Image (cartoon, rainbow, N blue to C red; front, side, top):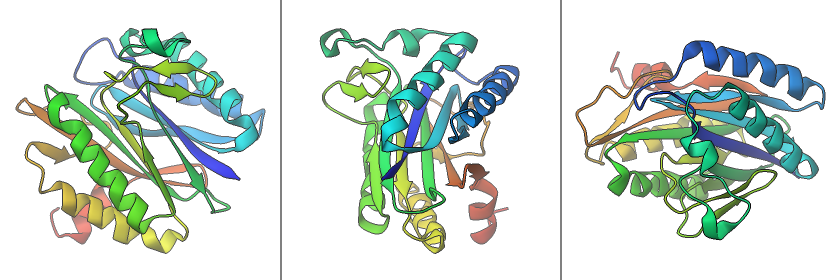
Amino acid sequence: MKYISSISVDISSNDVETNEVVNEKIERELQLEMSKIGVKSTITNVTGDDIVISSFVSEDRIEEVNNIVFKLLYKHAEGFEDLEGVSNDPKTAGEGVSYALSKTPSEYGDSIIIGFDTYCGESFVNEAALFVEEIGKKFGYDSSSSVSDVPTKIPGIGYSGVSTDDPVVVITLENVKDLQKIAGMIYGGLLGFENVYFVKRGSPTNILPPGVIYTMTAFLNGNAIDLYDGIKRKNNLL
């Protein structure tokens, strides 16, 4: 069985946006390291000050891949709050790395990755993420989110505490033809949430707080496709 493993983290020096130079360094080294073990992995989402690294990986390599990702993030981080919130003991785990893991039946790992970032929207961002996860459970193959009321065990890394925010959701697809339907449901459904905004990959958190932004990415055969323009065009919003 293969999985999509997604790690979301804030390694920025500020609370609004990421550093493109840092992202490029991580992506370059990520491709180098993963090519050595035959794993497809990339930065799928850049949302406010958070990045999501997603990997198409076999069950026996989840720990190894997650550990590689964590070390790369630590190497290039400008901010360490999320990374240092991870602990080997669930009792001492703090606000840390967001993690989601979903089974994939596709030989290409076809999936949708949704990354959230919040500015003073911690009280309602989890509700939005769980709503998206539920869409995935009903209409996708498998669906998981980082939202949890107990510390989350991240294979190869440790535990993140329940205070971890900025969730990530992974929805895997049985058929790539399901992508448009599910992405449309997510976009349409989240319109019903006050102060939750769909943004293009790489957008800073330029909103009126309190609020939440999210990006939606198709992860297909190791390639990341930002769905913002496609969804906006389909709905005649460009």
